[in-house]
Length: 413
Image 1 (cartoon, rainbow, N blue to C red):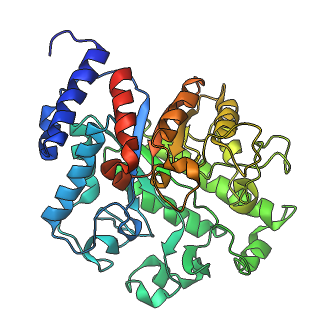
Image 2: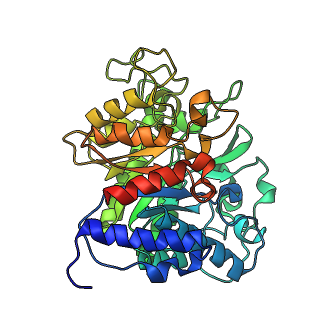
Image 3: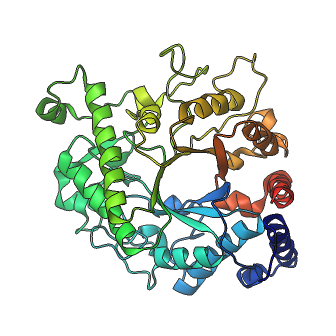
């Protein structure tokens, strides 16, 4: 390629890509972008959600060629928007978007759980993302089995059918029981199969551990607590230990398989409110991950079990004296303090899906809100990047907000 500075390289590449997308020739993007190896960059990513066909495939049952074309378009759009990473959901509901020996093919591909789609989405995504200079973070959900409570709707060979004692209904969904050691081992085996077989850059989890509380419903794990909970002061402490074990064990196993593969988690943005714990944030959120999801997200960072954390800071950047449940500015400051000196990278999860939504507070009607978020993040060297939810909005660009961010990324290089 010859001698070229990083800013000039990125500006040239982005200019070519933007012109191609404007002309409607998104498919030509990959071939247009020059390649070179560079030091680790600020991470600029987007989630691609496959559960209930949120982002991809657009509908179940498309041909393999159409599915692949849609996936490549998402990757090309990521490049065009100045992003350098995609977080691709490959295990949405105890299933798989690769030929897994542990779990069935996801129904979101063909419309039928267990039916072979005729191609390998994860393998293709890894190869094509890397060809475009994008990192590919494989996104797994550890415990969610189904978005309904009827096990008979699962394929007969599904592990949840074979081991009905592993499964609990709650809140209209089915979950694997985190209190069972054999469940923790199985879900790790299922996820780590992808680490062994594919050149992924990271294992990524979102905010679902124990399920979010549902009023009037009980997660029926008394028997498991009685069997395994000796020595814990209460069930909540035992549940947190179960989640800790999953995180710690997975982290260790990833490094044994491929040391370079990173492990990141994207939790709900509030660990604990300061009114609950003096170490908590100045927030008044109705959900606290430590207490409600039994996920000690702050502890995982402090103990160095994970490589990066992406708190979902899905709130507006408000004046500091405004009494709101949670404030983006307050939480960026709090999380920056949490990661400081730990070696754990902090990326910030951004609520692009709220921009332009009339059901959201007025501030989300401002196309520059997320650009303001980047201004706040720049004040903290601990913030190493941002990830946007999600791919559909990256493509559709509500209120032109994505174009503003993309232009900013182009200028900053």
